[in-house]
Amino acid sequence: MRYHIIGEDYELWDIVTNGPLETTKKNAKGVDVPKTRANYNAEDLKKWEKNAKAKKWLVCGLGPDEYSKIQSCTTAKKIWDTLQVAHEGTPQVKRSRGTLLYSQYENFTMKEGESIQKMYTRFTTLINELKSLGRIIL
Image 1: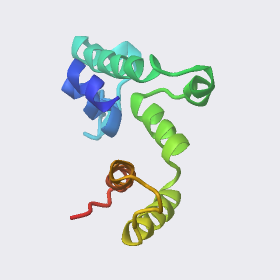
Image 2: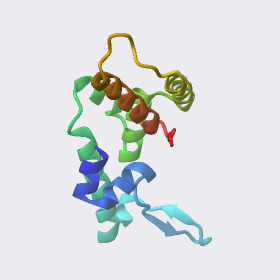
Image 3: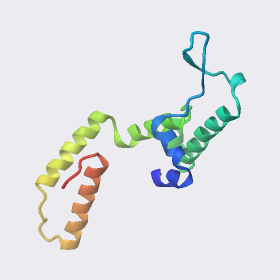
């Protein structure tokens, strides 16, 4: 998904991972506050259009079950965060999974009757799963 969104517009990926671009104005005390829809200018509308495009890219590939999980999300970041937790689990679950996978890596051996090709595929899958959890094996 990341590469599809980046291929469309790199800024969209920033919106997915960091949240929508801010539409603020200074109040009487000089503090930034969110603008109301009535105060939007053309630049503000472009920012919200970018968020809508990012949401579209995330939602287009979802089935009905997944869509029901994110239908109340108002930003692309909220959709992404919800999908990440649904598919990868909470940070605690990720840590536990990483620990389990690292243990499998440390104890990796060829199974009886396993071909070298199958062993290599199993090893590569294990390494890729560790990488996806942020555990880099050198």
